[in-house]
Image (tube, rainbow, N blue to C red):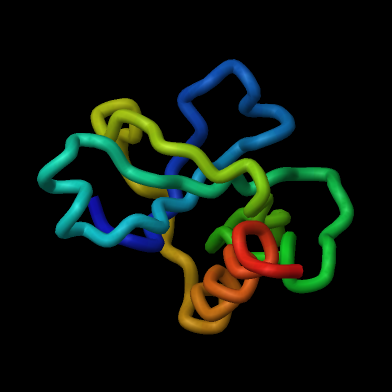
Length: 103
């Protein structure tokens, strides 16, 4: 499982959250069996820095819902549907800083 891979959401909330992006580094995931993901939401407005738009290749733009970050058992994530591009990857750290650091 690679960092920044995008997966179809295995939960029942697929309509609102069709995708999850793995943000945890591969080294940790290989040891714990879980990975930290950020939901990619459809049909919501982006929020500057905290919830930016990112592209799912071939599917369009989705909101990186950073405030909903969580860990999931890696076996629940099947085949990746794509990977975040370099520009979208650079949006993750500032978004996390907004959520967990001083505002």
